[in-house]
Amino acid sequence: MKPTKSFFKPIGIALLLATIFSCSTVAQTPDTAITVHIDLNKTGQVIENIGASGCWFSEGIGKYWPAEKKEAIARLLFSKQKDKLGNPLGIGLSAWRFNIGAGTAEQGDSSGIKDFRRRSECFLSPNGNYDWNKQAGYQFFLKKAHDYGVETLIAFSNSPPIQFTRNGLGYKTEKDFTSNLKADAYSAYANFLAKVISHFDSEGLHFSYISPVNEPQWDWSRPYMQGDQEGTAWKNDEIYHVVNELNGVLNKEKLNTKILISEAGMLNYLYSGSGNSTNQIQRFFGTNSSLSVKALNHVPPTIAGHSYFTETTDSAMVATRSQLADTAKKYGVNFWQSEYSMLADGFKEGSNGDRSAIDCALFLAKVIHSDLTDGNATAWQFWNAYEPGSADFNTRYYLIALNPKPDFKDGEFTVTKNLWALGHYSLFVRPGMVRVLTGTAPATQSKILVSAWKGANNKLVIVAVNRGTTDTKVNLDLKNATKKYKTLSTYLTNRDKSVNMQASQNKYTPGVLLPARSISTFVLD
Image 1 (cartoon, rainbow, N blue to C red):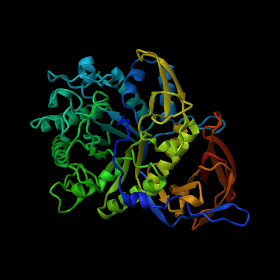
Image 2: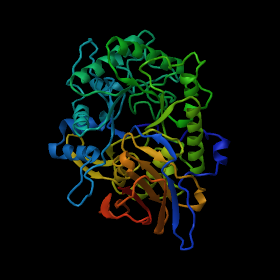
Image 3: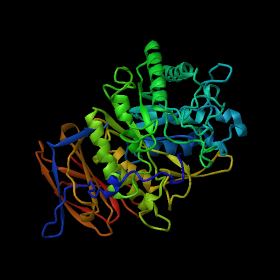
Image 4: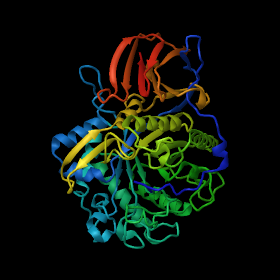
């Protein structure tokens, strides 16, 4: 969870002046249908994973909720299977983010974190002993992710363990934008993270990535953030320090987990800014930078950032991601969008009233589309898989809406349209698939967003979002296909509560229909 107020300054006049919105190459034909040109020889980035986080609320669900409920939630998130009619049973996430707690749960009310559900246990006790029975609920979902074959498991930390922090708390209380980690505890923190990785390796649960720093730019001492969750700021040199220490420990312990940096709180911090944790692509991957991590063998050429607060307008959204993509390409770096939910008010799109579930799902799909096609993201991860809230309106923070009992030891859950919106990408755009370029067009000319993805044997996946209020005919103009497509499987989500990635299969024809206010995935084989 992140700041719930839009307190950030405008990103810059250049972003506000940007007017080009990436969607698909479209052309109005005499019969008013839209033609989408897809050249299979023109490709973009290779997808590494599409996933979500199970922070905070995993503990109560996984530890206490009845087996049939938590098993059903796991199936919705991780299953790649379909029912007898071909309808997906889940969204087949290919990444799962596991929160390594700091020990605020053991502190109880003295932790300063008001909501007990957002306090996290720590595997390491202040006396130096490890208890691997801690975070039992989190571990339930981690094991389920593994059992369902989720390809990439990611461990992340919002705060070092409380015994290593300057103030003995799991969040920063001083407004100085520096780390809460004690100056003499960098080695201890790195050894703690390595110990966690090593333990789970021994359990057959391998973390492909460890993320030691989260949203280093935020002032965690702000009144409406303080006591909200675990968290701390980090300066770039402090990030380098902890990454360098961790790289050394991973080598010493012969662990092959990669280090993910830097989980920037907004995307523009990755390539611009004037603070102590900005311009992070240049600082961490610049050849002549004193903070370059390029020589650290556990740090891949990957930078991670969060898409919060950069989607207020279509033009700003595209400009931010396009500039990020250009900078990442210049420095030879892959970009991961590693955390997003609709924290800012951009999802309202000018409306003063409640936004319906399909409104939120369409906005989410628009952000995913832009991150992938404008930002060239090689990975995309949602925050948070489940949280308490309505499944019908303003579903901005979660994929699954929880209605828990006060003690959080039981409750009910409802699937939102957001789950299926993400599923249109996660279930079908699998690791190793490559994006097929489909061009660009001004946003004012079309509410249609199309991305295309090529897999093994030239299998083609097309995700199409119709944000408009009318049904739209689309002609698929495929060029340089090396096979003749015979079948067209369609998966549809719209405002109808019973239509959630509803499947149908037909003989392939180039003409398809995009119903109003809907998301469709087409699989050509």
